[in-house]
Length: 196
Length: 255
Image (cartoon, rainbow over all chains, first blue to last red; front, side, top):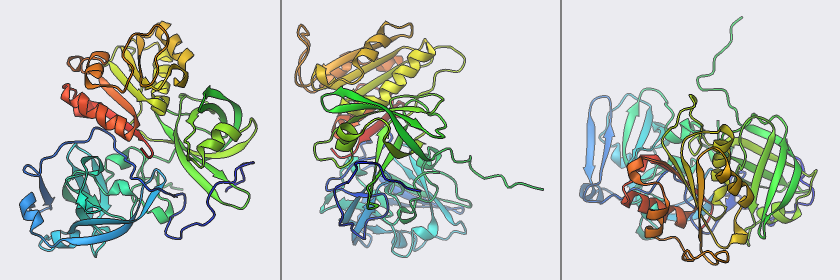
């Protein structure tokens, strides 16, 4: 259901087809965070994938020696802004999961600062997700998730966990921090899966 | 006959039709808009909602706004600042009239919220820190605290350009005079009231340190404003010894 609000005409009529419903294009890069920006030194940084059978662990230097992808993609925040054609560098989750054996289908991403978000594993593989550490040719700003954040651009951007420090495999889908606080368990911007 | 229980709590958020009950100037650039929202389930202090406007040709625009009110009932108060280059906020501030209808979705957000202690006791002190229109959800919290007569000490640090730009000035003064322990400290970034000899300018770390509840008292801190404001304040709070887990932030849109 939608109806007309008298007098409202809006501004743009040239709707970009790359823009999901309810989204507005922005030139800047707004920030959505629940708390202070953590300061993480790359000397202390590490990334882990924890499964039912063990743990895989990378230091920053080890991470930088992995295959690095250049990614150009659109990003969509649940707070109604989108950016088109953003440029990133990062390591594909396919690379990180190459030697990981797990029977579990769900992932909880954990961040420095304590935040979590849940994503099904099959939404992270096959070229759909990265751990990104550069944005527009520069090291990723702390306020945008640096030194490294998850990049899952086909889902709303809160799923692209800032300050990511690891992934935990789970047998069932459990809500993370944002999902417990009102955001959708899945978060597809084309279906407007914003809130539950 | 059996029923299937949903695995998560039934959604309380939904689209609602809202009618404008009142709109009035809050500051030279902002309006206070009171809505009657059909079927609104009530909301907690600090929550927000989405507003959707639809034009005659079907074009629609959606934006998020913090709610300045809380509690049961279908009345919802917004305070919207006009963004110079905005598409939705100039319409809401300058064009919206009593009786106009729009759509709202909510209430949204379950983290940047405040609830009074249920047993009537005093909880951890609460420090609110607002930059500009970021005061809106913090005002909802201050008013809920006053309405509950909550004995928990609460303070608001409010950074604003000039006295004319302060939202809710009368209500904040009234809350200060009420029975719930509450006080406001203003930081004026451009012009202070006559007779106010506090320094004018952007908040500094030193000013923050003297104006907020000390880290040793373990306050819960809510910070809301532009990204730059929130980033600066939150990092200084951590320098001052505040627990990162006790700092809740909300950032407003583009810088």
